[in-house]
Image 1 (cartoon, rainbow, N blue to C red):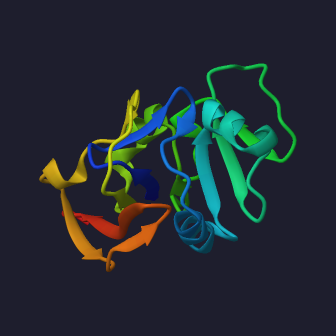
Image 2 (cartoon, rainbow, N blue to C red):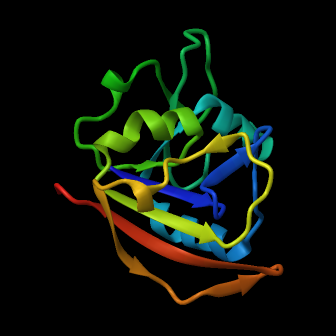
Length: 158
């Protein structure tokens, strides 16, 4: 299981249901990594996507406590126990889903933006977690006046 996220310098990931940054290069990176893959996301994250529609070119697994929730193009799951045993998928948020599944993840692809914005949702800081190590980092990229890098983290016990 792999996690993918874009974080601010303080590891903020969202504010009032929206992402903190709009970076086309990060969107391309996300699409390249997750295309033809399975993604796991929460219902609020699904609702935040354009039109509340699932991501095309991917199998979308949506976690929700709402037993009546239905949406075309997604597989609805009501508990973590319903996740595929293979674990071959990308965890793409939101904050509650990240927190619940981070202990099960072996890799994390993090876009680290060297800026902060007001945030009410955060991802655990992997730089401060002794279970995780930074495996690689890209050269800095500048886009829309923001600098960011693509980082790959690996769980130490993996």
